[in-house]
Length: 247
Length: 288
Image (tube, rainbow over all chains, first blue to last red; front, side, top):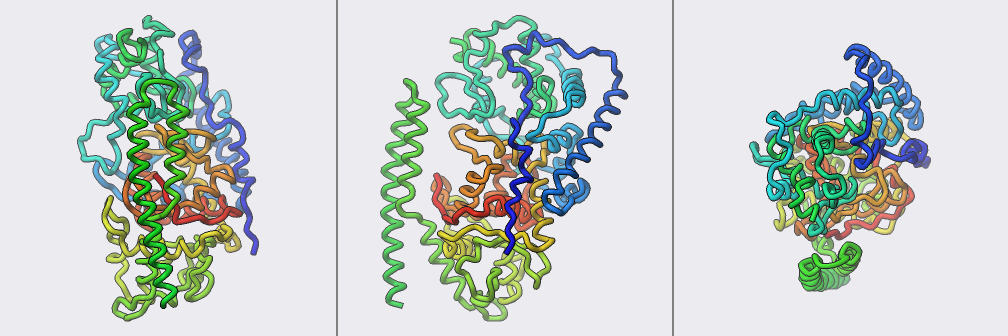
């Protein structure tokens, strides 16, 4: 019996999987993209790049001889899941960002597309309404530890945590940390807490795609995972000189 | 009969020994974790966890679940008063040996690609006359509860492919289509956290907290993952099936609730299985 292994189907994963953009060490000096192009031009460029992406996806699908349309997958997903708690079926509707990032997982985004997504993300960041960036680092630690929220198994109304330790080293005391994201130990000690650092860090937590489109980090502000006050508390965990992260 | 009883006693004893060892070791690891806060503990912690995983291998309670499943397989049940012994898992009616190493696959009698659990339900409905909705209403046991019938049957069938080479077929058009859809689903980012399967399973050496994440786009890791699910999860005191594995991943992805035996689940399992071809089945495994 013929049992193909489909190795070819995955060759695109051999390049580095995520375009993680600049590290947070360099980001504060990063220049914002020129403001000139309007939203319409941006949409057009994204649309054009999507067409290219679709072409690439089709090329990829030739590896297995079955071609799968985007609509077919969308329909299949809707059919395969049920609503429970706060997890409604509309979570399966992909945004442009999700669609593009799905298509380019494991491959480098074309520069135009990447810059368009990053600019759109940065432009939509909502900074704290009262100009206060730092809350309570102890509350921030609890948020960083908590992985509850937004799962279908969570009671509706559960306040979501940030689950930061799932992917990052933060304080030295917590040993059970993941490594999908960079270490944030001594984050503030290394950077200080000047206004540009505060704004950059806030934006990075709010929507990390602003500094590297299609990276893995959830959009904690833009997707409404954390409240403004929770974001202040996490900010304090990273940036307050008294926080265990910086001592 | 005599030999079967002997084997059964041996299995039970082995599983019981394993449980005792686990309890002792769990305490040791717990004590270590408490002390670990002081110095350079990262590598030590991982080494201790690895030691814990190693010791788990001595005696797997999944064997007891498989024994229950073996009994269920042979028991006459349902309106038709039939056992499952005529069930065709892909290698012919009644052939259990090696069947799971070649699933999911296309079944002409259902004109569909089916994973193991879909096929077991299909046999319960067609051979035994059981009600599909009832059979699938509660497929997974709660933590610490005794295994459901489905979990027991899965453990039995899976055990019968231990040591066999994984060879999930792609000869039929519908099998290739299932693979292609499964691949798309693997990369499908969605939900409030923008996660896909690939968010955690497409890079080498990644961890969530201390849990290592297999890079399922690499042959060796894909083979190991597919070869060791279903598994007995010590932390949950339960035998967990492949459908459950996928279900619980999507829960953590913040997707809605995956329906049991849904098309997406079968496609994804097909994708993972074909990616694992050439590996050697070693399930039901035992995991932390």
